[in-house]
Image (tube, rainbow, N blue to C red; front, side):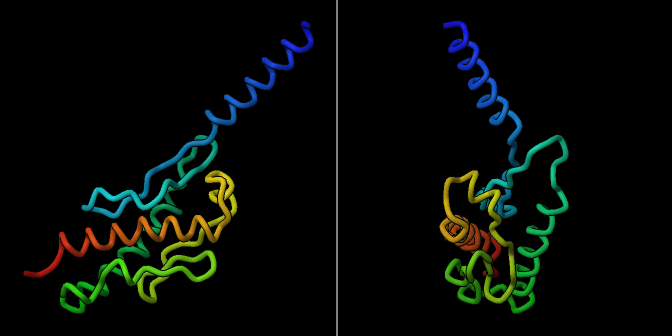
Length: 134
């Protein structure tokens, strides 16, 4: 009986420690309140360089729209698409869904790419609505 109790405690600690180690940073569409996805990581160092890379790619897509006059119809959530495991806004690459995030979400990379793209579509529509030239 002691052996079973010990094994249960070890299993519980392993499960809880795995949960504690995994952390995440919400990646939003600035100014919209729409969270695009949760960037998960382990350890103490937040991968701001990778998160900033996603925001830089989003900025390029939004800047292209602004440079073209910020007209309503020139950019929408319909411009978000998935190619394999990559997500794009028009021709601007945004990010690649990796296996780590797919496993954490209990999905395939392609399934998760579609989910994140759906979130990004909402964010792009909200961004355009907020920033349209009237």
